[in-house]
Length: 280
Image (cartoon, rainbow, N blue to C red):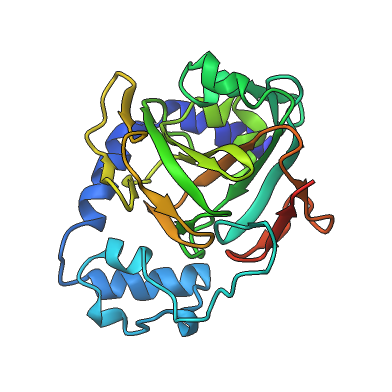
């Protein structure tokens, strides 16, 4: 009953207005920002001991704190083909059944819907593999590359702003292909790879290292940037983006590109740089 009410409330809330308001606050230099940061750390048990800068009074805005860097060596990279790109908890992972990704019991969504309607792009991941990782408020919110790759495209897909927590994932059909998102397409030694940043309620914006803040502006139409005429490359573990307030990443891999870590399971906490998988 509680879960049904929590999901129903999200349909009723003015999610766009709340998100815009939160974004303005998080990006503003306010005298009471340190007090909010202190409350946030206590409420969500944020580990500031691993932050490159643990002094909460040195952060000019809440966003500066939320996207804080970690100390050098805080996230060593495993010596494997694919490392986990974020801190968070595994939502779901496994095989793509034809073009369907598993969201939660009773809910699937298509690769075509996830990438914004591009059936040609989605077809490259037919019967491939996927992984969805949820970033909670306490987590480190920079996103890194799971393997080396060259950037080919970026697609902004407008959408809703439902929460992406486990309760909502169980209650909102097609959640990750319904919410606002930024789809990043890479070419790698293991074939094409997609890393999707999924927005949510209160997520002020999403940013990439090559573009900066992608949203706002929030438009009604899909926007696309092509980079195949440029050499924008990343090594495994390089930062590629960040959430200004937390959310979820969804990754797509071609068939037979990788074999997931056998120790992985839904709800398992993971950290950036840990073993995600090996080449098959």
